[in-house]
Amino acid sequence: MINAKEVHRRMDQAEKKIPETVTGKYRHKYHLMPPTGWLNDPNGLSYYGGNYHVFFQYAPENARGGDKCWGHYQSPDLLNWEYTGIAIYPDTEYDRNGAYSGGALTDDGNLELFYTGNLKEEGDFDYINEGRGATVIYLSTEDGVHLTEKELLMTNDDYPADLSRHVRDPKVWKDQGSYYMLLGARTRGSLGEALLYRSEDKKAWRFLKTITVTEPFGYMWECPDYFKVEGRPVFAFSPQGIEAEEYRFTNIYQSGYLADVRLPDTGQIRDIYKKFREWDLGFDFYAPQTFEAPDGRRILFGWAGVSDSLMTMSRPSGKAGSIP
Image (cartoon, rainbow, N blue to C red; front, side):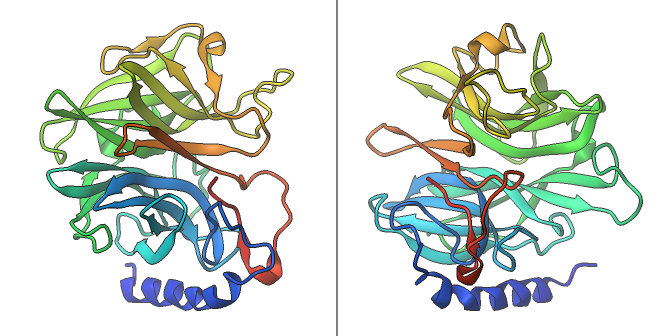
C-alpha cells in the first residue's frame, strides 16, 4: 500500500534545493530546465486562462532520474516562465511507480489532463511482457494550478491482448463532437504501434483500431500526437529502435511525423521509411508534443537530454535536461 503523505514529503523535501539550483552558473535563460533534479518529456501542453502551460516529467530527488511526478511551468508570453510546483504526485495505487507522460485538452471551460500511471511489481520479471502495468488517469483544473481528484480510466485489461505491458502517453482531441485518444504501444513481439480509442464523454473509452505499418518501424512508439495544420492532418510519434541511415535517425531514439494520415480512418501505413519526417536531425531531441496557440500557431516543445545518451551531469547545480 502506497503512503501518499510520504511521497509528498519526500518530493517536497527534495524541492528545498531549488533556491540553490536556480542560481547555478550554467542555468539556461531561455530553455526550460528542471527546478532541481531531473526533467524529461514535456506534458500537458496548452493555452488556458491567459497562460501557456508546460507540464513536464520531473524527478526532483535525483539529477539522474527516479520516481516521476509532473512539474508545472506557466507563462503569459512564452518568454517569462513561473514554476508553480509539483502538479501531479505518484501517490495512488494506480500510479505508485510514476506519474508518466500524457496530454491536455481544453474543453467545457476546463483544462483537462490525461496521463499514464506506471506500475511495477517486485520479482523476477522482464518488465516488458510481465511485471509492470500502465493505466490512463484523468483529472482537471479550473484555474490551471489546482487539480481535481484522479479518476482511473483504463488499465492493461482495456488494451489489445497481443500487446506487451508497455502502453503509454495518452493524447486526446475532439473532432465533430466525439473525443479520440492515441496511446503509444509495444507488441509482445516488440513491434511499435499506436492504439486509437473513442469516447463521447471523455470517461468511457471504446477501442477503435491499431495503427500499424507494413514493415517494422521500431520496437516501441511513444508520445503520439495528432493535429491539423491548415486542414492537413499530421500524425506524430517517437519510435524507439530505428537504425541510423547516414544523416537520418542519428538520435538514440527518434521523433517525427507523417503528413496526410487522417484519423480515425487510417489503420495501416505503407512506405513508412519514405514518409516519416524527423522533427530534428540532431542527436539529442526526443518526445516532442504540440499544441495550438490563441493566434492559431502550432507550437512544439521537445526534450533535450535523453537518458540513454552519454551526458555530463551538472552535479553541483543538481540538474540535468531541458525543454527547448
